[in-house]
Image 1 (cartoon, rainbow, N blue to C red):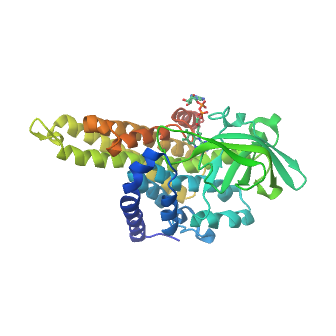
Image 2 (cartoon, protein in one colour):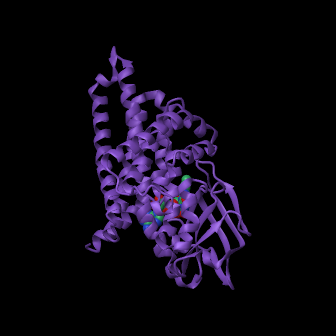
Image 3 (cartoon, protein in one colour):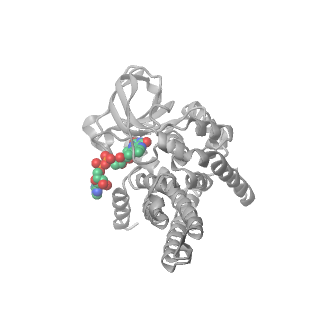
Length: 382
Ligand SMILES: Cc1cc2nc3c(=O)[nH]c(=O)nc-3n(C[C@H](O)[C@H](O)[C@H](O)COP(=O)(O)OP(=O)(O)OC[C@H]3O[C@@H](n4cnc5c(N)ncnc54)[C@H](O)[C@@H]3O)c2cc1C
């Protein structure tokens, strides 16, 4: 569906209202208790929010990438864990969208679009993070099945997801070319969830270990062809990194909005701190950098909607993730500074926002890895 400017605005207004009225009031509690926000999943299900990530043919709104990114941004303005629910539902669906057969797409996408099933994406292992091709999980063909053995680490939505896009070696001697992608379902025999991590930020999101102990899955759960998994994982990241950029951007804007209001109310030396040029300059820099990051992210959203492909898109995607997350870290830190001592205590949301911002510089490729990707494309002269 081609979405008009008015439709776009009204969809985003609806998401903003949900975020501000239904998500924001629980944000501090979810963070403090570090519990998964089942009520937000239900809220997003009831209001069709997950559908924003999917094509009409598979139960989605078909409204495209830019609108989805803007929705992640709106939600993350009030809570980054909630924004991540949407960003990861998209991330984990991309392998099936890119490499799935029509049957595979029909099996999974409508249930992800409705939110009936939560999805997860499992690439990282304890000895294979930035260097993901060093993974050790194996998948061996056995008649009409594959048998998976190994473990994944740091997987978002571990334990709450119904499906996991899992990367494993079908040919351990072949390096990158030995990686294949599979769909594993939560009730598959031999699959279990190990320990869940305690974290600095996005504390409502589960991050955990996946264990495969002779995990037997039907052979038709292979995505694409054997050996295509590494290339698929990289194509997925090209398309999912903007989601993390949107999460970061929402955090930055949410922190600015809070600090701006606070600076006009808080008095020191007989006047609002916002009357001090030192504070004004901080706010001006924060908004300028956030706006510049937003322009790059939205451009990347438009490129996705125009059907952009690698390699130049790879660079743009990495650049927007790098810029938005670095800006978010700086801006949320400055927001804490503007609140002074109050910024450092949990009663004020900028403390949570600063902790939440940090992960955006780490996951879906650390910001060093984004720079590696950007430099590689630049040096290749594309
Ligand atoms: C909360 C959370 C959620 C996550 N969710 C998921 C998920 O859903 N699915 C999933 O698959 N993974 C997930 N991850 C994993 C995440 O993507 C990895 O942690 C990340 O890619 C870094 O890998 P690593 O932790 O092994 O760090 P390492 O690869 O060990 O890196 C350590 C340091 O070395 C640097 N470094 C490494 N190589 C280079 C290089 N070539 N040049 C310069 N510097 C380098 C890194 O930037 C980093 O600073 C998650 C992680 C966290 C913490």
